[in-house]
Image (cartoon, rainbow, N blue to C red):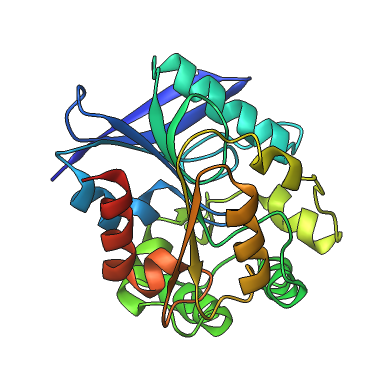
Length: 262
């Protein structure tokens, strides 16, 4: 199953996205993590169409979307981008895999919560802040990321890296995700937002997916999230860490399809 590559201009940046499946199918928007890009969702998207129209977004500063000219990657700014993206496409109702509250039909939150475990935060911070700006090769990048997450499916990781690098003018390689995000980690900056209160105002059915081996989302926080959500449910996937879709892709697809009624 193929996709169309499209762009849309919102909030002063051009966002790139992949459009899978029939235009008249119920839409689901997929949002990647802090170092990711739209192509990390290929495996899932192929298994949601044709029953769903799948829109995989490169968020600002990631993939083939523009970097924020002012290095603004705050939670509120990213959420505004998603709302504007949905508005530009005329999505009256849609499912979201990620985190937002705009016109949602269903919401899937993948291994993240209002409180992030310190061990996982430190691991991600070190992985980003210690990365060189010039990458020797795709294979080097795979091994570098694998050291931070040894249980990730290696073929999924290779695919992530292949679409997560870009050529420099001199022919070398660097990450597609913006340098400003790495600099943020090097400076120890973090956008701290209270997300506990908004959980209670999410009206749609919400699935919280936790990797049983996650060092980012603790069992206690995941349980409290489902208790705060008006219509929340929790699933833990054995053998998966924080990158659940890439650690146990088939198990993840099964839970997503069941929740979306695919």
